[in-house]
Structure formats: C-alpha cells, structure tokens
Image (cartoon, rainbow over all chains, first blue to last red):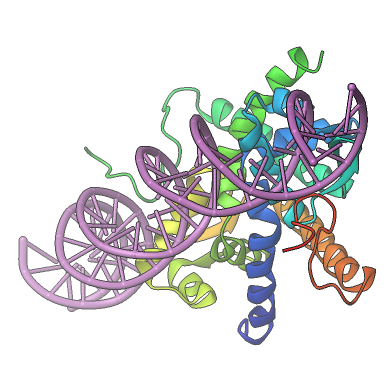
Length: 126
Length: 126
DNA sequence: TTCGAATATGCGCTTTGCGACATATTGCTC
DNA sequence: GAGCAATATGTCGCAAAGCGCATATTCGAA
C-alpha cells in the first residue's frame, strides 16, 4: 500500500515540479506574474518592473512562456505578454497567506528563543 | 507608478520564494507533503515513500522543517513528522489543475506542430 | 534595402541545490 | 554505562540555474 497509488502521483509531481514549480521558483518571475495580473505588458515595461536588464528579463519570460504560464503576442515592434492562468496567482496568494501565518506563529509562540524547531535536531547543550 | 507598491510586494515575494517556493521546488519534498496529508509518519516510513536513503530524506525534511511546512515530534526513538498547513496542499492542487489544463490545451490547440509558442522567438526559417 | 528599436538567444562564469557517503547525536534497553 | 536503532548533520562532487555580455533576429520606417 501507499506504493501503487503513489507511483502515479510521484510521476505527476515530477512533471509538476519541472513544469510549474521551477517556473515559480524565482522572485523576479513572481513579480512578472503579479505585474501581468493588472494587464498585459511589453518586455521593456517588465524590465522596469523587475528592475533587470533586458536580456535577463527575456530569459525569465522565456521560462514562463515555455511552461505556459504567460502568453506572448507581437504588436508591431514589440511583444506583449499576458497572464495565461489567473489561478496561479491564487495558488501563490495561498502560499503568501501560509507564510504570513507561519511568521506570526514563530514570533508569537515564544518571543524569546529565536531558534525555530526546538524539537529534533538541535544538540541540546552546545 | 507601479513602483512604490511593487517595492513592498517585491520584498515579500523575495521572502516567499526563499521561505515557501524553494521548499516546494522538489518532487520528493512534494511527495513527502502528500504522504503527510494522510497522517503523521516517521522518517523511516518517509524514506520508503520517496524511495531515498535515510540521509537524503532527513535533508529534505530539514528543509521542510526550517520553512515551517512540516512539524517534528519525538516519539521514543523516532521522530514523527506531520503536515503543518493543509492549505499548502490546496495550493499545489491548484497548480496541478493548471498544469493539466495547460497540457490538454497544448495537445488540443493544434495536434500537429509539436512546437509550443509559435509567436515570438523561433527563427521562422532555420 | 538600410537603419534602428525591441526582443530573443548563445556563451562563460558564479552560485545554488541535490545526492551519496561518512559521522555525530539522541534515546531506549539491558 | 554499553550497545543499538533512529535520525540529523558535515563534506564533497556534480548538475542546474541565474546573470551579464555580446550578438542575432524581427519588424517598422525612411
């Protein structure tokens, strides 16, 4: 048990990481997605948003594009990018919420003891 | 505009990537989370689930632990891990759905033309 | 068709992340 | 306290990712 079912899940998770998570694993790319949430933008505009040189921005856009997270369309001389799946933003927002909870939890739990995880690792003495 | 507001968002996204996304950016770690969704497990059990040696499993658990994604509790000789935020699974499930949509879309759009993204890059000729 | 603006891509470098091995730590039992 | 089982951690080598730079490609305009 927990082997036959997991087999399929494992493979799907493999693809998920390669296809989605890797694309979301960078602050600049997340910033791009959030910028596109407000509406389409061309590359030059996105350069300013993430404060990165053009080549770097294009590289990040290529990553998002290849994974189907954004859509590209030529308009005259420039290329306009737009968000393909708004649900992705939902997912990220959930993670933002979780992180907020986690931070306040760690701050509140015992304000002192700045070390997280008192349980397992942590050599009790030194 | 799009600079003052983004400033704060950018910093939060930075922390989000470091705190959450990095932790979710590995198939084995996702598999661990899904296994824990069914209930707590100790390390030895999780080794079997992700089919990895003990040291490697512990390393992944440390990563999840440090980011507050799982919780560890000693029970006698072994350490039992459990899921801290079920919402994380929700978020991942959303991404799974998005990926499924994206795959079927690419398959359907034009079955032929196995290349994705016909728009911008792609040297038209060679 | 020549030029220039906008964008994409190849390359080399540096940093980061994963995996395997060995080893340290912790707690239980005798 | 000695020994054992379970888990955690340090180190190393390697593959992957991000970045800057130079360069190629595409399109519009003159």
